[in-house]
Amino acid sequence: MKRMNFLGLVLFSFAMTLSSMAGESNVCYNSSFDSEKGNFDGWNINFDWSGNKHQMGNHLNVSYLPEFRGKKNVLKMKVPAGYESKVETPLIPYKMGDRYKCTFDILIEDVDMKILFQGYNLKPGIPPSDKMLIQDLRRSYKAESIDASKGASWKTMTVEFPMPQISEIAATHLKKVRYITVLMYVPGATFGAGNFYLSNLKITKLPMQVKVAKGG
Image (cartoon, rainbow, N blue to C red; front, side):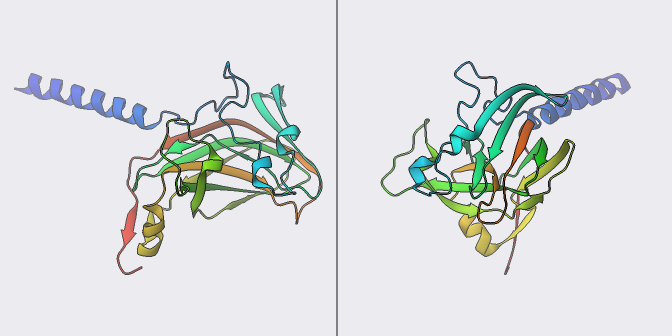
């Protein structure tokens, strides 16, 4: 009987380990910028379709560095003065209630940045597809942004989506979300020229579902 209990404990521990490993898998496509289809395959870096003059030519300022200051597979964004320079991860399918965490290394020269999760739904008349483009979507949820200040060295940062507990009003917007991304941008109307560098990005699904505060 004791032997069976021990065996059961071992199997349970093994199952929990596998579950934990599965939960830690990176769901962001081409997060290391090493796809055979191109360093930035899947990433949203070209925003010419938006018609926003502060974002035109954004993709021309993005480049890939095999190594930079001790990090490998690095995205470099040159930030011209007056531009809203930004990069946005590939789209990730989303199911109501799920929570995600994004960790990454970032180095910022001479500019301040904002980083946040965004939620999208389909634009009217656009059918669902396994090859959705961000221009086929409209934003339906904007998470609270965090600030990333300039500095001379790499820093590791984390953002989560959504918060562990949200209001009922926020939940009505979250129910509309079909895809999520992580957006990193420098507001052109506020900050000047510089550069930022991104490496080791990972997006994982968190084990606990979001809670909705009744009456909130």
